[in-house]
Length: 108
Image (cartoon, rainbow, N blue to C red; front, side):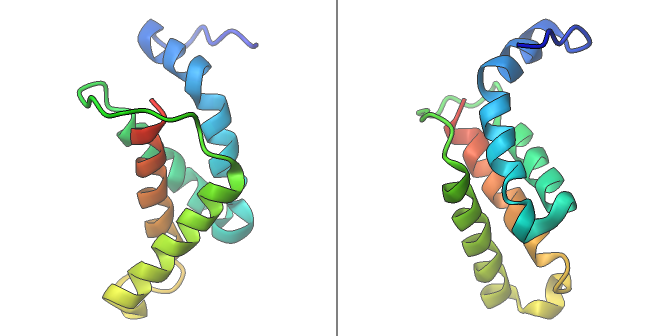
């Protein structure tokens, strides 16, 4: 594994333990949400990794589970708020943030 010397100790350990599998799964959704959507998903994942939360954890989800969750969250966002609320280009970003945060909360 590559040493992450620029990252402070606690976060370096966190990224080494859970970051690579989760980041890979979120990046695999790129076919649906694109590169920016994957970046939004990673931001959501980081917010879900808040050390203040004490939630039950599960291993990182396979890429296809994350893809389905992002797609479902995006469809729900359209159904609830309508396409005009975010603009059709931003709906996958909303889904990616929601999915990333959920995966982050559950995979600490």
